Length: 86
Image (tube, rainbow, N blue to C red; front, side, top):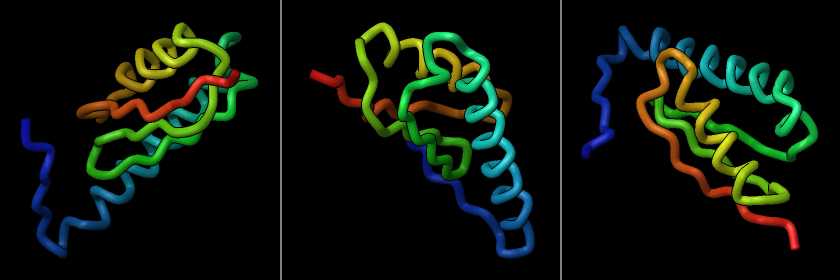
C-alpha cells in the first residue's frame, strides 16, 4: 500500500495542522491509559502515518499503543518501532 500523499503548497498547512492534532490526541490517549501512562513512547505523525518509537515493558504494551493510535481519527496507518526493556 502506498502511503505517499501529494499536497499542493496552499493546502500544506491543513495537513500539518491535522498531523499536530493527531499527535496531541495520541499523547492524550496514552496519558489516560493505565497501561501506557508511564511508558516512554514518542509518536511522530506525517500525513496521517504514525510512527511509534521508544521502549516499553512488554509486547502487550506495544500492541496496546498501536491499537490506541489506530483508533485516533485521521490516522491512516501505524508503524510500530517500539523496543522492549530487558
